[in-house]
Amino acid sequence: MNLDTPFTEHCLTFSELGLLRKGNFRTVTDLLSNTVQDIAKKCKASPLEIKRIVEKVLDATPYHHISRLDNLQDESEEKFTTGDIILDAALGGGIRTGMVWEVVGESAAGKTQLALQLSLFVQAPLELGGLSASVCYLITSGTLPTSRLLQIANAKALPSTACSLDNVHISTTPNVAILERVLRDILPPFIEKQTQGGKPVKLVVIDALGELFHLHNATTTSTLVERSKDIARISAQLHGLASQYLVAVLVLNEVIDVFDRPRRNWDGQGDLLYDTQSRLFSTAEFFGDGKKEASLGLVWANQVNTRIMLSRTGRRRFLSGEELPKRRCIQDEEALVPRADPHETQATLIRRLSVIFSSVSSPMSLDYVVTEAGISALGNSVVYATSSNNDEGVSALPPSTGDVVAPRSTEQAQVPTRTHGDEFEHLWAEGDSYENFDWDALEENLVSQTVT
Image (cartoon, rainbow, N blue to C red):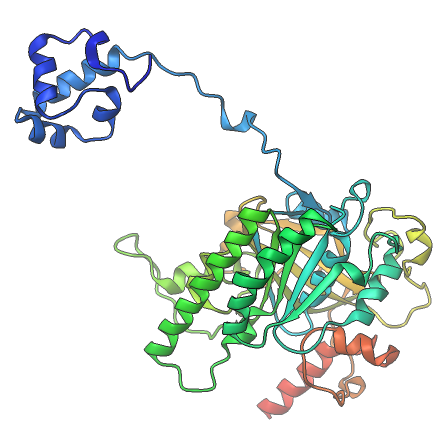
């Protein structure tokens, strides 16, 4: 029975039909789109009488069988590999299109490394887990580390005919106004052009959004309101691109320090304090790392589908061949990926990746290392979020077997001459002199000097 048909087939009396027509209610849809109180007011009848009539109509209306949502498949859903099967599993099968992904982390944690790695694998053929697509890389400061991009491609042995710099389209967006113009006026026609003739754009990277909102003036209510408006406009444009053109949007972001302060326990009455809420979506406190939180606040957090946090742990490990992660076998990658040297005297820096929240995967955390081949996850370090992870007594994840927790000599830590920039791109560009640089020892040395 059509819900827009008149009430003639619902066994209503003439008086009941006349009562409903008095309020201009003639179909089942008219009744379902109004409350009993509104219908009673328009028909000038008692709510009890109207309720009885509505129930009578609904009883005479047959149910329509609807397919279960889990039986429906979205044919437009696409995803591509990160280049690491362990990381793919942690992210729900890889990087899905039509979503806004955020990678947040401190300097030298590997944010740009991951973005470069994804920029290559989105170009890979379908049989290798890619989408045979191209990427638009928006840079807010500095330049794209193309030498590092080529280094990852060579280490992964990606086919040069499919993965090259020709498929990485770069644009500089040094301020908010230019970024908005690129997202609104330049990217849409360019994506449409690539779809019609060329490799379609399936990944848009912003490196890094937080740098556009560094305030040189004093923070006031007006500046925060203006920042919120800018973030809202940018977010709307990003979601528009993701949904209309089915691209994956990857936004790199910064972290800020979390200051220790007395925490008030919520008694279950009244509104939940923001300080209590922010631990759930801005930090990795579930996994023992609550010293850093994502920047740009709640306004931006509400716009992200998946938030990934990268952090430095201060741990090192001598990796054996068995501990090295399994990766997708691409051509002769096995021979090109550097293996652990049994005579190696320098332990490998261990970093931590945490999925804070996601619409396609569960919150979890795992260790990873950065090599010439990019980011590689360590499979024996995966931890999923549970209620026990959020106990007050949990301060840090216990070190894995084989970790070197003792700090290395601070005499080995020397300040590099180049301090501008973020991530590893400058380090890789300088050559091998910084390949084994001990950043964690440097940080500990600087902190100890500040305290004394």
